[in-house]
Image 1 (spheres, one colour):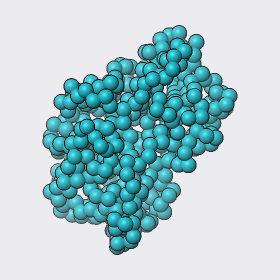
Image 2 (cartoon, rainbow, N blue to C red; image 1 turned 90 degrees about the vertical axis):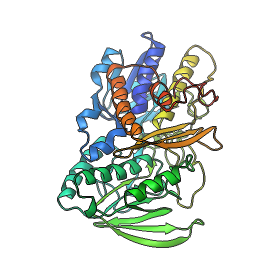
Image 3 (cartoon, rainbow, N blue to C red; image 1 turned 120 degrees about the horizontal axis):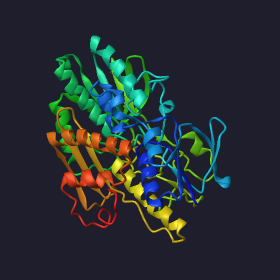
Image 4 (cartoon, rainbow, N blue to C red; image 1 turned 60 degrees about the vertical axis):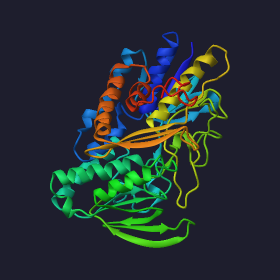
Amino acid sequence: MSHVVVLGAGLGGVAAAYDIKAALGRTHRVTVVADGAYFNFTPSNPWVAVGWRKPEQIRVALAEPFHEHDIDFLPVPAEAIEANAARLKLADGTLVDYDYLVITTGPRLAFDEIEGLGPESGFTQSICTGPHAERAFDAYRAFLDAPGPVVIGAVQGASCYGPAYEFAMIMDADLRRRKLRDRVPMTFVTAEPYVGHMGLGGVGDSKGMLESSFRKRDIRWVTNAKVASIDAGTVHVDELDPKGALYRSHSLPYEYAMFIPAFTGVPVLRSVEGLTNPRGFVLIDAHQRSVKYPNIYAAGVCVAIPPVEATPVPTGAPKTGFMIESMVSAIVKNLQADIDGRPAAAEATWNAVCLADMGDTGAAFVALPQIPPRNVAWVTEGKWVHLAKAGFEKYFLNKVRTGHTHPVFENYVLKLLGIETLKDKHVADHNTH
């Protein structure tokens, strides 16, 4: 009997736990170790931050569904990975031995890299976690009593731009409904070289579409932006030119500010020799395995992926749920192969598909593969995307509650976008996206 330990219980971790257990059956043991007892549907955090969702609506207690599927659950943070001994040490002193470790921790939020950034020791809000989104809503309610300028964006080194765009346009829609929008100048600040770059070098006409959306909503923007510091009431930004030289500096006043920070690997990963790159992301081979420890796999935001292209201000490549599910599928197949004594063969697909809510409408981005040149690259806008994302929220939360193991993104997103018949080897040969 093999013991597979999944470290992390987010989008990737929950999917990995259910899919691995379904594939390996009761003759093998699966344990999930997580920093907390709940799953939070992160894509819905922008809605929580303006009160369109309550936290409990996008949260699932994991103990019962995991128990029903014969998955052990330890909601205790990991303190150390003893890779050579093949075991975890948890914060309460518990030692957990494993035959295989699947790392799905997500990132560390690097607020400390910019003075004044973040909700704990800084002045800005975040929508990266459930508790951050709740705190952002508390700040938003106070802001509504005395509205003023808003600054929203993603700082240098960020690799997750979609939620920043979503939050800007969701807030715009909410303020219009409250008839307060005329009292709130809005500025979008991003490390991207242009609006709609998304860390992907653009997708179809994402630049034109998002610039048009911002103009319609009276949202100004600053690109090639390096946030120098933030103090109470002012964001200090250096705008660079295409060659990376200072073009001009901005001091942007705000009554409410939200920024996506840069990500790094979590400390428990960075302390393992040879496991990560200098930023703390797990170095993997083509089969999602650690390059140093063949019994360790990784999926999701914790994985090291190089930027799609060099930009004047550093930008990272996004790791969408579409891609994460593909990584999980590859891990499941390669775990089975290793247990059976066969060589690993499955590889994840490096594709990006994103459904972005824009308040009263939405945008769908498709980049297949993620790194150019691409077989498919387009973006489309419509109210159907707004409705589709709401539907997907319910769909995925149902998977978490019931333990369904079918590939959600393939069954929902690709068919929704009408490209389920695409036979590109980067898409159709994989069972999960």
